[in-house]
Length: 197
Image (cartoon, rainbow, N blue to C red):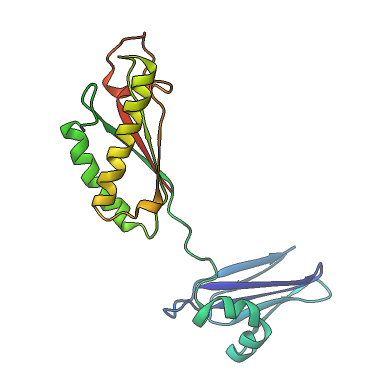
């Protein structure tokens, strides 16, 4: 169902129910004060009169097309007025073997599931951020975290995800999931976060 609402001024308005591309007609309730009407047929219309009352009508399709030409033009074949919302952002975590850019076995499986989701999305924007635990010095961890992010990007591109849709960054040991002392080997901190929008 598509709804077209035209507010001409504070006392006059018109609501029209337009069938969707598949012919389905939903329903809308229009209320004003104690007056209430249900529009549940194609091209059913409510108008608010100058006196503030709701008047129920049925408008010919041709009149809707001409009266609401800009809106109809934006909705080919009267497709629903509410366009599909973009998919919700989602995040994935992949984990690495200590001191390397090699994924754990569990993360290799997770990468496969993630790729299925990415292929399903029309044009995902992907941010890959690498992290390390606190073993080693900060400079080496900065390099390792970036290497991990680059490795995941290479894997994604190798599976058909466009390179221009993927950005990478390395955060080293700066943003741990688990706070630890320096030198601590914490598997949850050895990760890449993949944010998909």
